[in-house]
Figure 1 (cartoon, rainbow, N blue to C red):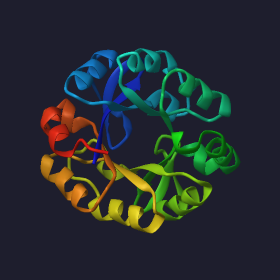
Figure 2 (cartoon, rainbow, N blue to C red):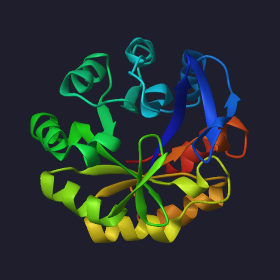
Figure 3 (cartoon, rainbow, N blue to C red):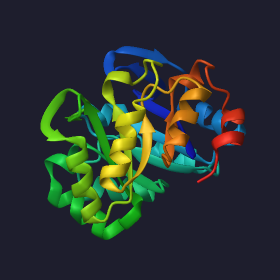
Length: 237
């Protein structure tokens, strides 16, 4: 199972949010410092999100992506990517994959065009609350289920998705194992679990379900999971 240490960037700082709420933020310093820390622990793929962009602003982290990629790690990045030009800039800055969430739902033509152009470098961001898609920085709920959208994404040629249970994000309450497994089984996507992971036991539960990957956020920042140990046990593709 592939592990993706997370770096969420807001106003130039590495932060973690609780339940995705902007007002419930904890500052963890400079993004590049965190990237070095995770790289030195053995991580080779980081999940880097522009929260300012995700909340509706213009994405401004391409410079940070360049710095992080220069450390020799691969980068999977999303947040605020709403045009083909923005997607191109993020990839040109050094991201190996880009995650498209809101725009994948609100502008399916752009999403499909991006998948045609970049193939497996386009990752579907499927964020759900009570099974329904959450969009625009998780401030709005759609009427479509996450599984339904995942099926459509797979049909377009998408291979990977990041699946987040919004109600668990940053809460260290355990991942939505059954919902994550359902997403993988019903869509055929290689699912990267995100939200709520708090222990090695949580990672074991996901691995038993055959889940492709997991994003590690607050569990790393607060020392609930030792990254070196987790990579030694679960760090395969």
